[in-house]
Image 1 (cartoon, rainbow, N blue to C red):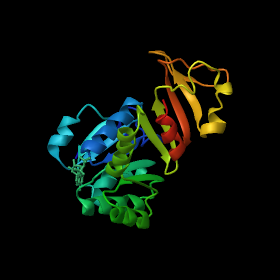
Image 2 (tube, protein in one colour):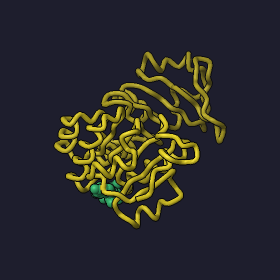
Image 3 (tube, protein in one colour):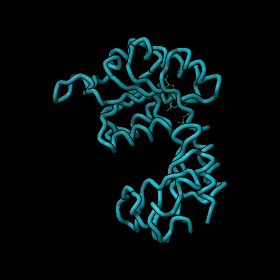
Length: 231
Ligand code: ATP
């Protein structure tokens, strides 16, 4: 088995504080690992499928073929030295739970695991996994909001609070946000504005939104969604 560059690489370092181990490189794990790399985080990817490992060779800091249900194997890869780990195995619930249990035993401070159902999520929580994520369910809910309204994007911050990216409506176009009464009347706040291809700018009470701008609003989900449907 290849040794980890996180342990023995050029700098001879052990896993750096912000490096992440991602176990299970299916669609979810792969997208997550590549996004982490994109934003400058070092990633050790682990999967037991040789083809998947080959396909990601050179794309991650290191990618290794290994069975994550074997504690000794994970130790050899220095997984216990990481601060952050994600169990992204989905379909094989047994492998997911076993892996999460081993990582809990390693006392990795920041542990995420993907759950495929509420029961599965409950077991992970009982194991003490701090961050249980439900990608399919979360994406389904997000898309439902997009399908129902006119939002360009919808990001739930929590169950009851959301960010909505949208085209501006008549309530905010052409006057200072401070005069629009948007907070008092609609219970939402314009956080940022984007003009054409310019970068996003934070909005304040003097910001005047134009019809072809894009805006980002924040507020309680029901109010943000209702505002997103006003023209
Ligand atoms: P996705 O929706 O992200 O594609 P999935 O729900 O189809 O995932 P699986 O296919 O079960 O989930 O797992 C994702 C990845 O995890 C696969 O690439 C699989 O090879 C890998 N995997 C499964 N079991 C193990 C294991 N014991 N050790 C390492 N990798 C594993």
